[in-house]
Length: 292
Ligand SMILES: [Zn+2]
Figure 1 (cartoon, rainbow, N blue to C red):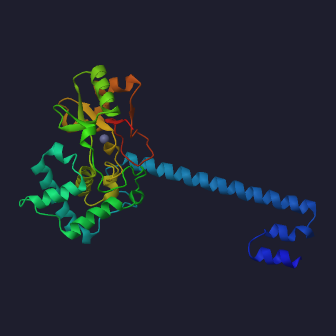
Figure 2: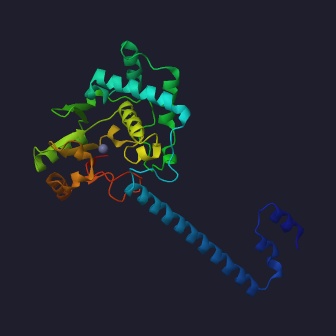
Figure 3: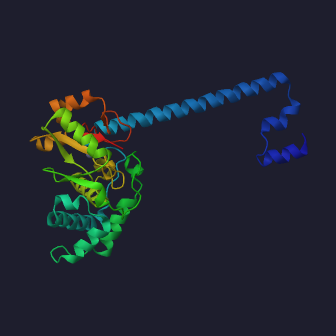
């Protein structure tokens, strides 16, 4: 064998097939190519099988969103006390500032707000660190496959760009969101209501932590019902609608049986963010209007 080629092969710079090529007949060479092609096909098949399995797993999670599943990630016991402290303090702030104001509050505004009122008191260092950890954690680990749409913890909603929707306690962006909402109201009627509009990082964090509490510390299970902070399109313009006087049922599959939903699907210009078989690992949300 050519010594230089052997040297290069030992470095992985030329393939072994090339090193030994001069020894082989053309027939043998073809045999090797056929084997390599089989190897490639097998690799492709393996990738397909893996992707199929991944899709099946995601669909299983979506259908069984409200159960504890294998590989779910839980809050550690050590984190429980700080988790409870953060949740309680955020709850106090929402009650004190009001639902609508809280839905727009930025992280810095929240820290300041807490310090200002003795009934609330400022967040302790470990509480701030906990909230930072929740925000910057890779949500993929929970099984959540949606993208991160806001990367800054201190992102602020520009008050000039938004409008409060009368009677709803929610805000919408004046651009595309408001236009879609007004068109929906016109086409479906007064029985269609806005149930959730713009949500700041703080608001989304509170909802996610509260859902984690209801899920007994199961972060994965919480993420199947609520996008982790930074991953919600409510920060960018998506909103939720419901049927007037339908209460919490607006956030269940029962909403899909209402006339309001039926009309919604017939309009043609709206789409639902999380469909029955979505790949994001999020429950079916017939009420969530995709704007972005
Ligand atoms: Zn929503």
